Length: 117
Image (cartoon, rainbow, N blue to C red; front, side, top):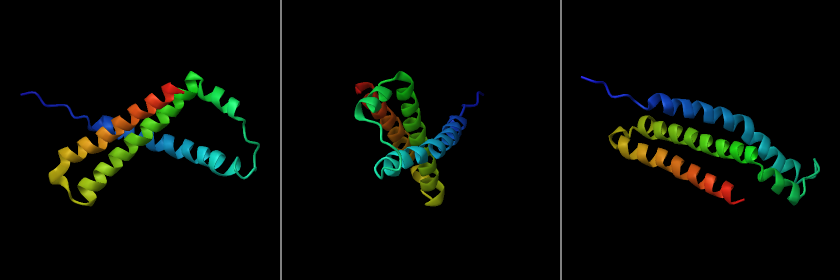
């Protein structure tokens, strides 16, 4: 009798990496683009410079990684909140499909938008 392998370790890996990436990078981006540049605390880069940075492949890869990992972090946290916090274990397969499916669709959307720039 063969034991079916679980994808649970992969989900926890994406959860932890996504949480770490979001905790380190999102506050910096929010501070810069939400406060420092609009309030003239720092000189804002011009549009042409930001566009040239965004068109660099490494920047696109980092932004995609940040978006995808943050979405998978959300999916795993939301799944366990619904299943264990709200005691909706009977809908486990639907919850998994919606949460991780949403993360996959969101990651695909991020990739599409980053490739269009």
